[in-house]
Image (tube, rainbow, N blue to C red):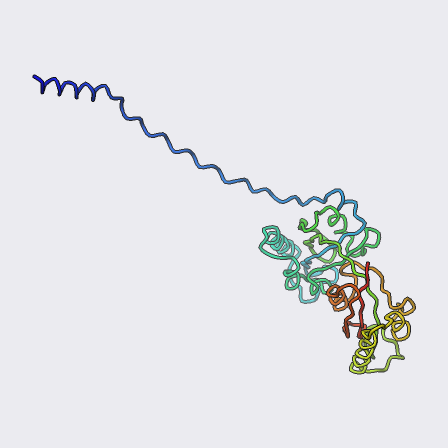
Length: 269
């Protein structure tokens, strides 16, 4: 009898126990965050800036203005290639300066990493007017849509505005750009002369401006060699690279450009 009661109690407990709760459904996975395209629009300050700097990749087609004879692609093919290059740039897979050196068909800016230069709206080169407004509408660092110009399709980037203030002594040689008939020294002689002037300029207490007035074969000589404050991309590349690498009041040389050999001093802005 006691066994039956015990069994009855056990059965009663079992029967009165609540049924097992069904497992809750797994929470749905959160959707991946939306990809937000970076804002490419210029800030109010950038829109009203006096100057803007641009880098470009030019994709020319056969028959475009100034297109090299080696260009055989059609205009449609040029457009497609420009869009392809832009896609890689916007995705962050490529760097415009690096890409321009191998992909741009612009003979002047391509070797400079696409650097077109730094200009005001008023002195913006007429040949590049089709992209001027697009540059001013861009945020610094942003990539433009594919733009059409007479010389090809353009992918442009607004780059930071930088300035450098320099003065120099120029020693020309026969055959250098703008060297008059009166310049008869050889390139080797010009380099040796520039080294002598560098030593003079670096001597303690030297007056660089006086040396430039006396020795420089450039119109800036009358200003003590002062070239003024210039934006990135406005000077001969070798000269500009050397100038930006200098500390304030530092002197470098001889630096060769297409104009001859330079002894350069960086001045405060």
